Length: 411
Image 1 (spheres, one colour):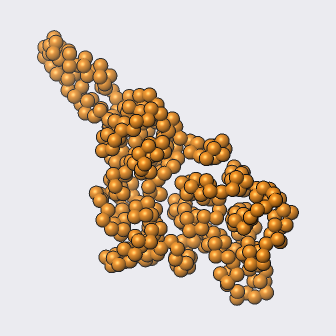
Image 2 (tube, rainbow, N blue to C red):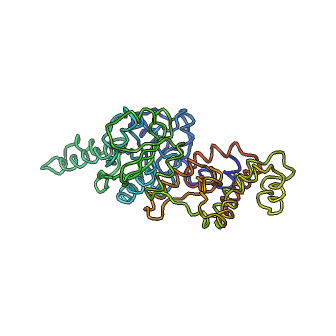
């Protein structure tokens, strides 16, 4: 990952936690029912998730109490606007935006000397079967302070009230109680420590529960798309709900999503765009074996690209240039179907979210598409960083250089 780190492409917006902040973070972990970290220094993202702690614990989602109960930790106001690098749900970043939008000033006040534990309560204590995800609707965002700071404020105000009552101002016992409270918590009288619950309503979303499920609502009938085959097989035997279900590998799913105006395909338009050329070059790179030039150079130099293309067998050339072949043949025969000519992975990768979808839904569908056909390195980086990082490690050094340059240039 050194190359990505140097290029500021690997969790570059994380913030470092050390000193007293580690102590507060550990108090949050304990309050949420987890064990402390032994690390003295680590980084966190917008959700308060740390890759170093995840590695230490051997648990990627160490802030979850089971798949149905997710949490967050706010240790500093600097978390506002930070990316969520390892989301369990596609809406996790939106949850944190809602938190800071409503409570930013209070968060600034509380995190001066405390920390906030967040419980995302969707009224489901435990998942039992895959179709339980259909019960997701309203999520109540609940807040808890370490050291029960809000309770300490109430007690301090009560002590002040006692102090001011009749002749209690001369009572040394009351003096000592007030001093002890002030020494431990400071002056809490004017501090705003109240964080009201927030209700967040989910629409279509992705969750990593049960191996990964996309739930598409707002259609004629809800659609569930499973990444895990065992979860899919279990779900199709459940007749409780009226839903359509697919495994992510099902080719007929693409046609169904087109018919529902979820995705669309404009081949002539895509042929002129940078996205197609990224996809084509990345697929082309997988055919390059024992080259005399660095892969990056071959992909960037038009003459070298053609040279290596023409040295390949005819079957490989047809796959790589299948879109161009289809468009040429279509000029002669209007009835020809794209799937008859275009290589399947190129055909799927060139789909895009339907233009009628809302921005958040478009992002969700982009995430689905790059998961089905992870051939666009730029969009894979944008929409599924964890998968991108895992894949990047296995690429040729020169291909890695091309990918980094592609992302940085937005090619």
